[in-house]
Length: 288
Image (cartoon, rainbow, N blue to C red; front, side, top):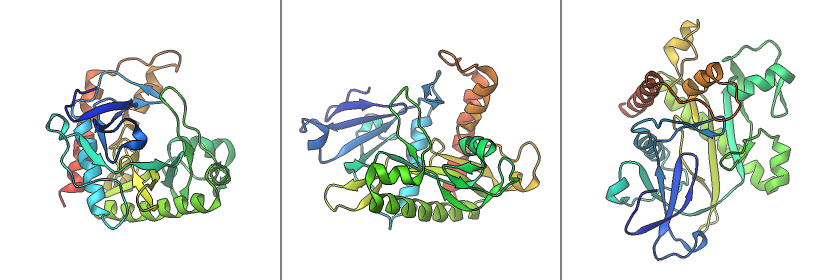
């Protein structure tokens, strides 16, 4: 972790690192946090090698842009400059009491949702029409929560009823409704830029100062979302689901790894291609 003069590290995750002010003894005492995005990339619950150069800055810039575009929504980003050592890949944020739920919204059938549908005709307990194919639009966006996993553990899709058991009916319903509304808003913005937001993941917490449910973590980045090109999708064919996100890496691993032991190192051309697609997504969203 980066050595910073005014901040001390408290946690290192798959991609992000968390710091608290030197004046705070614990995370619970901190009145602000520093969230630093690294260039690491993870897939299938493994941190991969090598890193994707510049990825941390690309993710941070995209999160900042989305927080600004959704400024009326309570979120944790503060208008404070991060330390110069990490200024391009860090955000100063409000501490939140995070809910132990990954709030996933899907507008299209893909990823783990496609696998569930093939097996059962459902996704997270939600029945879907028969005959859907991978990448097809759903009749309406669906909320498919998952458990949060520590490094090395697996996220697991769960039903809405399971989230009610975890956090209570009122909060579970609010997270669902907030996530669905935010997805629809973001998908509309993407459509205006010729992009499809196939699915995305939100993380919410409760503000310690206001008590309001507040958007935390990253927002609608290439790591937390699945983006497709609208024109390529409309044309159909084998390239219609080419993504601007780490699905590129997942696809390569699926073809080159038996999921035993450590995953293989990513080839140079895939690292470069992933970097290019992340950069292209940022440019297409933020240049309009």
